Structures are given as C-alpha cells and as structure tokens.
Image (cartoon, rainbow, N blue to C red; front, top):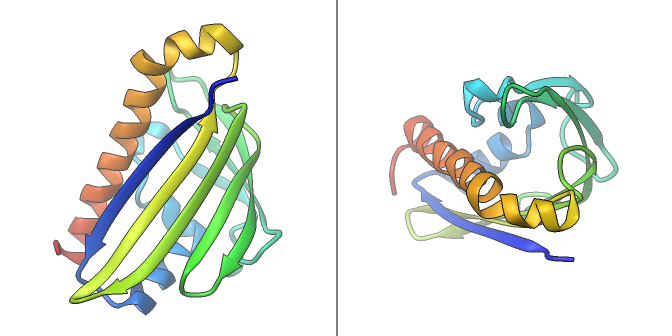
Length: 153
C-alpha cells in the first residue's frame, strides 16, 4: 500500500484573518478549482466550517467522469488550521491539512495532503502519469487564482 504526499506552501500579502475567512468557507473552494472540473457543492456548505461538518460535492477530475466526493472536516482550530478527510470519493485515502500562519507582510499557507490511489498496483502505475500531474495542475491553478484575488507576496 503506497501512500503519496503533496506538500504546497504559498505566501500571500493579506492578514491572517482575511486568509482564514476565505479558506475556511467551503463555498470558496469552487472559486479556486479549475472550471473544467465541474465542481458543484451539493450540501453541507451552508454554515461556517466546524469539526464534524460533512460536505458533498460533484467533481469531474478526469475524462469527463462525474464523481461524488464526500468530505468531513475533522479538526478545526480557528485562524490556524483545519483538516478535511474524504469519506467517499475518487481516492482510497485523502487526508488534507491546511495551515495558516502569520509572517512578515502577510501569511504563509501550507497544504499537506496524504493520499492513496485506488485500484492497487494499477493505480500506482497510473499515479505518475495521471493522478500526480492532475493534482499538481489543480494546486498550480489555486496558487494563481489566490494571487489574482489577493496579490503576490
């Protein structure tokens, strides 16, 4: 069983409060997801983030295949971090930690995602040519979108 990790850091010239307000609102996930992914929230994003919150989405990650994705917000420390875990969806495991810390002139946002692809050995073969490049593309899009919204550090 191979578990992969994606680790991204981005600095933005905004206050910690503004970063938290944006990132902790589940509705804003659509804003920082590429349009071609057909990201739609079905339920669970109607209130501010809290531990135990279940959010259901429809997403089209590859080949135009619509997939239901259900995540649970498992941990929240206001203004500092939150964790979402996939309960149902395209991955065999998805554990995503979001950290926000104040730095001189802005904030540093850190994403640590531990994930496992489905389909065992076949999934591991596909990972470097399909899954990893797609995740990298999505996070590059997020970086660009956040810079367009808030400026560059």
